[in-house]
Length: 118
Image (cartoon, rainbow, N blue to C red):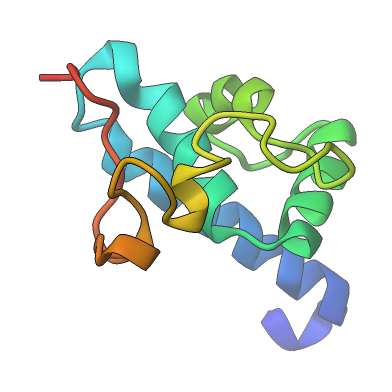
């Protein structure tokens, strides 16, 4: 039962569930953009604390994570990495040049599919 779990375990369970939900969505996309789509979403919308907990879990074996999440993890920016590294981060993540990102009115509710994916 969930009331038997520590607060840390409950947070971890939620992160695993969220990562798997993202991967489940991207399973409907072309195979060549799935991992990048998962990584882009996590890089854009997960705060450093969430990504730190994700990588701590992954470094301990990543129990419960879908294979697509594990595949995408090499493209996800570790929190200690400098800003602008990784997939789906940098200028577009700030809504800067190119007219992309929330600063330019891009929806936060729709996933970013890499261009040319169709």
